Amino acid sequence: MLPSVKKLQAMGYKLFATAGTADFLQEHGIRAQYLEILAEEDEQKSEYSLTQHLANNMIDLYINLPSSNRYRRPANYMSKGYKTRRMAVDYQTPLVTNVKNAKILIEAIARHYDMEITTRDYQTSHRTVVLPGLVNIQAFLPGVATAGSNDLQTVTEASIAAGFTMIRVMPVGLDSSITDARTLDIAQANSRQGASCDYNFSVAATSSNSEQISLIAGEVGSLFIPFNHLNDNISKVAAVTAHFDSWPTYKPIITDAKVTDLASILLLASLHSRNVHVTNVTTKEDIRLIAMSKDKGLTVTCDVSVYSLFVSQKEYPDCSFLPTAADQAALWEHLSTIDVFSIGSVPYQLANAVGEKATPAVGISDALPLLFSAVADGRLTVDDIKTRLHDNPVRIFELHEQVGASVEVEIDRPYAKTASPVWSPFVGKVLRGSVQRVIFNDKTACLDGEPCEGGPQGKDMSSHVLVQVPQSPAVKDIQ
Image 1 (cartoon, rainbow, N blue to C red):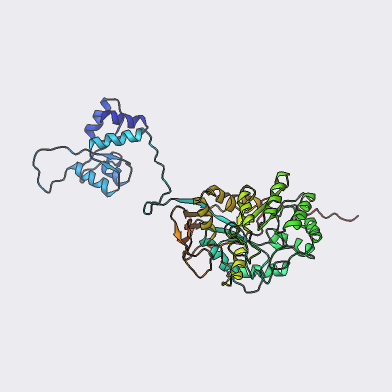
Image 2 (tube, rainbow, N blue to C red):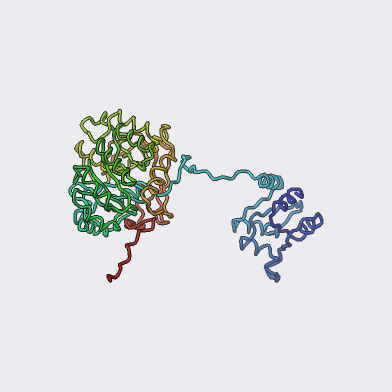
């Protein structure tokens, strides 16, 4: 054992030994702190007590080799060595009692074998990944500005269970929109019923509210200019100019403009030196225009609904809001142009179109399984998902960093999508990417898709800004 003990000393471990062993080690130039075992009635300082070192977990590895005594002993006899070995077991101190095993263990420690812990579940043997809390930049609330609506509660509950710890609420709903201080007050009042994740309100532009919404810019996260939504669309690009002039430069501008409207918006943004984000891109013409704009140096970003990557007019010919098969192929071809994956109103529109019950939660739980199924097929990587559901949303929209938020996803095991109260077009299909655990505000918020009792509550983060807000000029006295 002497060469092995010398290796432990060379690696910097502190060595303890009882009387005879300590003397032997000292003779061979190995320093060891003396410990001894005395009878219980004997007084002994704790610094020399082996039993107290074991009881206080001050020893990380205990090597004790039982003597091969050939003489018979009474059945009730317990040696000091047996007592300390028993103590090591009781106090969960690693114990080695075989000289060959001790030598092999020390050799393994000396060679610094990689002891990396894998993310493979020991029970299921399926690999898991841990992502930061994810962001849905386009959460659709049909009754976003309808008094008494509980859509925010429904959407945040579904979002946290699906791995989204932050949502940006679309300001345009089905029959109401956030377009001024009054409608924003209604949305904020609805949010006081509680939310399961953090959220961020926006305001929608109309042809005549540029001056009104500039007064509430500090209470919302961004300006949304709708051209192709379900409600309250702007009909003329000319009406947008006033919004570019009055909206604060430190707040993002988002639009769902398409084709010629999109080209006009991009030109207007360039003339005003403004960043613009294009949401819900569905056609090959638009994705190519955005790619070309980026190549020319325009500060434009875009998102694509997850449903648009997996559902097309080929399966649902009557749904013109979906991409055609050729459009969908172009979206995949221009994956590097797509900055963010979103959910948006596409799932809700699809449920309505096929005569199913459309709830605010539709499509949310499908997002990660669809994306991780694409990872299994080799069309995406885990980094693609992290970049477009966390890194880019936080950067583009200057969102707060959620330090105590993470999502654990089992990515290897295939499973068949089962029916639930929330409709999905993927029921019966084999998917991957099951959300196992969601941590929010350093607490477990959901486990296996079920909310934990007393889980953390989300906050309104609409007023959060990362940049220095320009101050109004000081008022000068009139002479």
